[in-house]
Image 1 (cartoon, rainbow, N blue to C red):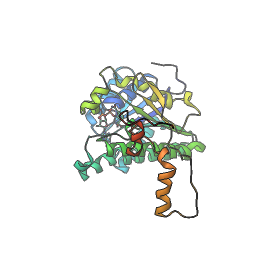
Image 2 (cartoon, helix red, strand yellow):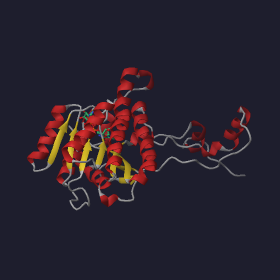
Image 3 (cartoon, protein in one colour):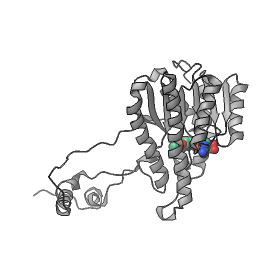
Image 4 (cartoon, rainbow, N blue to C red):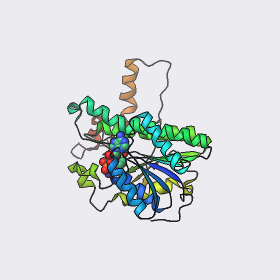
Length: 304
Ligand SMILES: NC(=O)c1ccc[n+]([C@@H]2O[C@H](COP(=O)([O-])OP(=O)(O)OC[C@H]3O[C@@H](n4cnc5c(N)ncnc54)[C@H](O)[C@@H]3O)[C@@H](O)[C@H]2O)c1
């Protein structure tokens, strides 16, 4: 691990969901790099285990059992960091839930619970941290944990939507916060954790050697001063691969007319957009209308 990162020594950082999995690895590696860490987890026993482990190895850590789904508790979590360490310089918005379900199997209570942790939790904790950082006037860095699933994945609609929300939030906050010196980036990890054990498909894509520790250097880099000038980015690391995820964009051709009625919309699709439809989802599925040109069983195009 890179121990030479600038500006992590003595920085005060909150890591949510730090009782196990990726959050635990982020907290431990941050402390190892000299940061002072609030190890938060709604499961306080696990948070205390992470904090005690850090202290046993000579690091500085305090446990928090606050739930990020409650704005008052998110505020208390940030305040705990300020009270214990005198400031909050970094936040890793990592706490998250997931489950697999086909759309017709979804239960409203389960959908709400996931959105409360993965979206509102990130917003509540982020806003509390941003208020404290701007009040300090010293800037800071936020790393939100999104997911490659945000590009769209089967049986993960609600989870994917929650992580897409985290990506949008990252771009928007990066725009708002550049002038106050707060950088906001997002990381899409892949690592062998409890979240992966729950799904056979995830287990196939994520062998046990993809440990959470392999993602920690990226998160530490984005929190450190070495990442100065880097904000508004979505970065994916799955162990061996590290890459930026492209931003959605307004795609040409952009057709323009005074008003669009159903007939002109239909013509736009028939005459222009047919060739511009996008493969969709993480698996890049070709839309049915284009498939007749791309499937190997189709008759090849001939020229006269
Ligand atoms: N593991 C992967 O491959 C993977 C892939 C993409 C994204 N992610 C994301 O990474 C993050 C960490 O996932 P993980 O794999 O380590 O999962 P995990 O289930 O091992 O750990 C998540 C932790 O968050 C805590 N938590 C849940 N609700 C909370 C709340 N309300 N307040 C505070 N803490 C709460 C849990 O108690 C748990 O300890 C999640 O946001 C997840 O969506 C993971």
